[in-house]
Length: 518
Image (tube, rainbow, N blue to C red; front, side, top):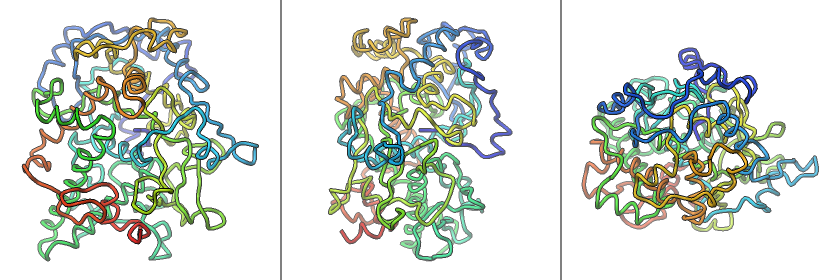
């Protein structure tokens, strides 16, 4: 999820117009009155030019958008993505004080929003990856925009620039000895848990989205801790050189986890092996590596988040477990942007540490349903602070911004069998032929439900995501794949030789001492 609020400077530089004071009537004015049915000559020329890493691009420049950007289509997408609509999981978000299940009850009784077999932390690691490679601050929601002209504010490499910012010498994040600034949840207690470094509550980080929720903030803080522990393993010497080596170690172990743990979970090892052996079919940049808008849409794995989580075991009001909604309009929740001694993550709930099997919770399935918490976002979780505050509506309207082809057209271009109207019958009541020409994001979710049993992406979504992430590693001369035969070199507390997983990452970073005594 890429929803966090940019800095005030970024807001001033990249302010967007409000997207419809009220959604529906008058949409043509916001959409500029123009309908895109295909790439015109100028757009085709832009798409054919050599790709640039500081711009977005396309995988399928010759395919038409799934629909014209008309008021009728805007209204249909808005209605389909609305709260209480067909893709709302209808989680009971009432707190216990109002007769509801509260966050703990939602965990124990998930209702129709079924759990997958993947650990809950996969959601936030995936979000962290996303924040590392694209950040669109310029395009306007729902307004057709050539992606090749739109700046990407992140470096499209898996190189943790979302953590390291300007690198050594960037005094906002890096100290003079080459270590990273780290905060604590209780600055008055030197033994308290790690937090993002903050100034007056605001996180001092290179990408403000990494303070969107407590879990993503915890992951960012874990990377800071990992870097500093890697630095401790190096011999004395020049601070700049030691910083560079600690960053390389941190980045390569992170990249290893992306390729060997995250991708196998969401696309399957067979597809990864096929791409590594036979090459990429569709993501083959003519120029610099870039982020395709089809990836930006297909990678929105927003069916994975749960409506509530156990944050930790000792931060509750009575010193016990702390359960919170992900987002809630009136109750305490897991949104970021603040610090307190109780606000930290015990990772045993989110990843499978040996000895803590009973503590682990899983993601929701990759399917058509989304947790209800995502249908009422706090304004701080939206990049512009402007409506709509429904994540599904924002995802769907983004298709009109980029002129994204339909899932069916992309499937045919890939040589895959496309889903039929009966597979997408939930779209029929909204007209405009959406069940036959379907927004890619919903198509990918439906494909995962039908073909991947809710555990993995299907052939279209899986191919897009795998090719781009693998391609970003293959095309980066500084990635671990540039050194054939490299395997993780730092100690893995739980995995075997030549392996390294997220539980090893946390253990090496020493962000959760309880896991080391399992």
